Image (cartoon, rainbow, N blue to C red):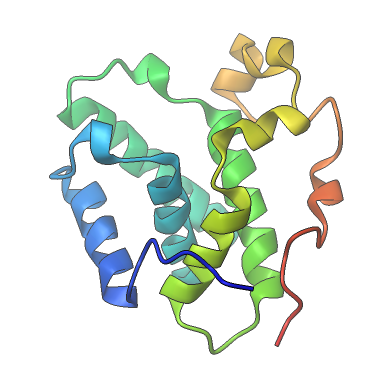
Length: 153
């Protein structure tokens, strides 16, 4: 299976993380795919709850640095992608370059609308979901299972 190369090397992923954390990256250049790459980098360095906290704190800092209303942050959406990335990384196998794994993940989960397979518009738009984690109402996150996820090598 040919995987499109969004990132040519692990150092490109690390540079993206640095740009995000320093807030030097412009908001319009921080795509859904970039979010996946940053959280994947975190998940390779720390436990899921620590990666989620670092992503949350980084997103708030990023919003503040670019004078974007903090209301734009959405807890359930952030945690959904953290959890999905964790599942993917667990099945991706060890010893592979981060850039290769991230490119493969983006090829599968690069469409941010995927969340609507799990959440109704009504639930994901609720204040409850914006402010805290809520379980999906259309299908469980566990159903992400191994569909489209490579077997461990």
